[in-house]
Length: 419
Image (cartoon, rainbow, N blue to C red; front, side, top):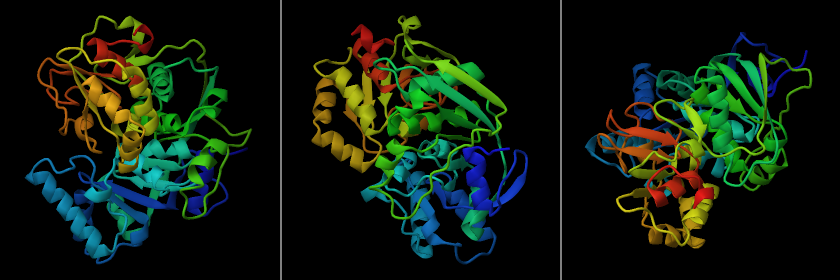
């Protein structure tokens, strides 16, 4: 009996020939990460354990990104605590304000996560790195503190689900729409503690940005991880960035899956998740009467350069609707500089947008775009729970960057095809 890509990576890091779903294994971790919210908790547990030194400072990444630049005294103190810990422990991979970025865009961009890696982060969207062919999953701060100390953690090997996509994606449809459609199909608990393996001809032609977007939202279906087999598109992205060896794993033809689903995406329209769950998904054409107050283009889901180019294509020569707020967040300094160099900022500013420095900000209701009572936003982020971006009586609609940009132009949820 063959093994899936997830099982192969876990087995390699457990030092065994093979593993099977349900098996408990101890694995070596290639990279452990935490941010300005979760790192202080992990550091506290580390201190309470009485340990003086981390296991390997080169395998720890600390990325303040949720409330930076610091929005208040409390956030400043959290970052300072993390900064001081990094200095004390010799952790070079502390990304301070001069090289800040949203962690799940920053780490692949910096070549810190590579195909075949096993990565654990104190953030649920650590599963993003599956887009590179890595086994990546989120854990609590206490678990991550344990990795700081030992360099290892335990895992229950997840069952795997296989999602096969066929057909050519229409214009304005991408990875965000594929994953929203998938979550609509299986529900927010449909992949609970399972590996979501994405494959098929559509995935093989999907950009790296689109792949990272899909893997990012595996957690919204309850997935332990999302993953895609690496290929030449992966190699082209990774090779210039990698500073160490990496491994391409593939699932065996006779690997066992607990569920296999196939989709024909030909003719698919952009998808939108309505309040208050990522599974509450409908085609954009069915939501034309939904007025909005704010649009946000950014987050670890859709704030990469491809996303900004898509938004700029929609916004070029247009102006946002009266009373509308449009916030654009390039999620790393490199993306920020590329967008500036390509003239995208001129398009955004001429359209009436506000451009933010790299930050998670409004995605988690942190700052840089909080919603008031009764307000609605369309966002390229990953969650639309009650109160996610502000007031308990606000509403969030999730969409791709082209839909968010088009909606900002009209003041209501709009397909770019209708402009």
